[in-house]
Amino acid sequence: MHLLFATSIIPDGTLGSGYEIANAAIIDALHRAGVRVTVLGFVWPGRKPADPDNAIVMGEVDVKTDGAPFLRKLQWLGKAVLAGMTFTSAKLTVVTRETLRNAVDKAGPFDAYVLNAATLAGAFDGLFDDRPTLYVAHNVEYRSAEENSAAARGALQRLIYRREARFLKALEERLCRKARFVFTLAEEDSKVLGVEGRSAVLPLVTRSTAPVVARPRAVEYDAALIGSWTWQPNRIGLDWFLDDVAPHLPADFTVRIAGTVPSGLTSDRPNIRFVGRVPSAEDFVLRAKVIPLTSRAGTGVQLKTIETFELGLPSVATTSSLRGIGYRPTNCIVADDPVEFAEALKRAAIGAAEDIDGAQFHDRQRHALDAAIKRGLATVGYRENEAVA
Image 1 (cartoon, rainbow, N blue to C red):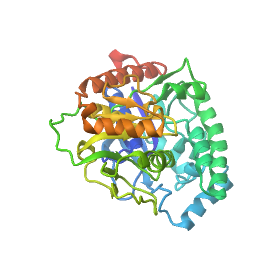
Image 2: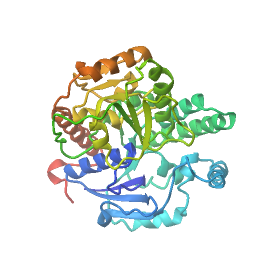
Image 3: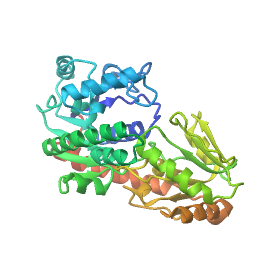
């Protein structure tokens, strides 16, 4: 079986974001099923596909909104309004519909499309209607846009997010309706999208094999948070931690926050330090006694949660951080109240929660991921004994 995996950004092996980690995990699972996968999409400027022999690169794009020049943001918004599409999809309209269609035709015979999230499919709506499709809903994107609108700090931003939510809802409904099968990353998302009965949850992993962690670990700080904080759902969780949880932590409770942050985001608490991008996310979190998992918004699954559980690290998690997780390790404490969250962090940091072996969690996730992938593939003609074509 041969699938054309249509995505906004082709994995390049760097795994710099949760979206890229999820894409790599899904493509790896398809390969384990014996399926040939050709990936179609764009690459970040200066990057190359991780598997260039099985990739069709439509060009380079930088789709990050934060830090983009004001004129570029205005151009994206203008394109979206004129074309009647989402702001995120408008960023990908850097090639013509005919150019993309020619690239698809040159991909050779294939059995079905995997439409990876709504962005590329929304930019070229209807172009992928000539074959059966499997749709991967990383999030319920319209719900995330609604939450972003509610949390927006200005009237214009709130208005843009409302428009985005309206267009995303219509787009996601079309993609789900046309798809033979829908993959989600959380059970709740299947219900919201109305695809129960013809969908499966993909329990993700962040790597192909379970990590091996040397213990005892050399810790340098009490807590570590890492993420793409310019993504609004992540920012909502970080703001909650800084504004509501941090005031209840002792002055000597050290917190390090890694990852890209919006300009101007700081903390006046001397025990909290922003360290920017780090060479190794794994090494960074392994130097912490406990990992706060602070999601308060969004849909889909939190890859930071999965990585924490794979590494066997003690954690304190909000209920939202556990979306899509069927098995919670014993060293994860759940707390949604900020005072309770802070108290749990303090207890974990003094040894109330210990490291465990994360291999069991990783193996459960990977086994369930492979089974879910095969369920979806069966709807487009997959036969396990005849998988490779």
